Length: 156
Image (cartoon, rainbow, N blue to C red; front, side, top):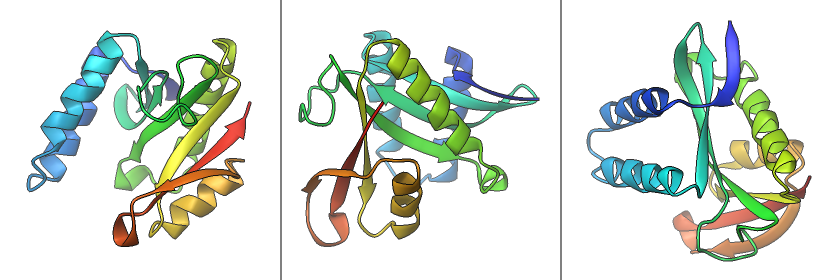
């Protein structure tokens, strides 16, 4: 059985434990985990999960108020999709697409009119996926060279 829904605290922890274990050379994983946990606890974000047979295997976070550029997330009518990830063995099965649709429906039901998403410019495959999902309104770019991030929006 596959579910696409808001993650429990336990599922959030399991997903982040695996993220950290899979990339032990990245010292920022525990910092990022705490930042997401703090935003969730403050009601500024919600992490959603892909759950297969009771086990979380993918995630995405709906950021409702980041305090960053209001074109990306303003806490009123524009929210931001972040941290879309799925375990390798579940890639290419449509799970993230279905999770994003769940997140979009949740955002719309809570009064958000637009969602935004960021993609590193070097990630052409992800950019193609986001454009396919309808995130085709270019908003802004940030950084340069290999660190360039492109931001797109979609009206709900």
